[in-house]
Length: 116
Image 1 (cartoon, rainbow, N blue to C red):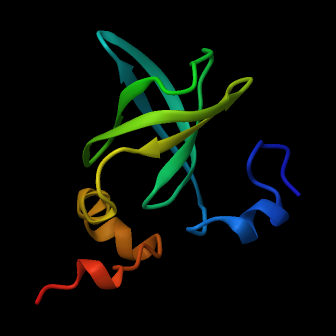
Image 2 (image 1 turned 90 degrees about the vertical axis):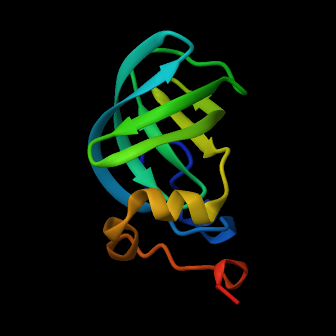
């Protein structure tokens, strides 16, 4: 069991997507403020970030990572330095933003993403 909020085995079974552990440095931007963060896990629906700042639930922000276009998200929950972010753009667009990394992360296309 992990010491990081939201990462227990029990909650993992209830989640829509399996979390992929990563350790990426990036930043989040809220309005004109930019803050360095560490990304601890990622899915097509959101990510867990660690930063030395408290963010309120519902805050809209951009997540910027190397070699990935900025992703729009909102704060779903916060606990100390950990923040669960939920992407506010469609899953297909998130997977596309991750490009070739999406496949290695196990981001599978959903049936609704299939082209006719």
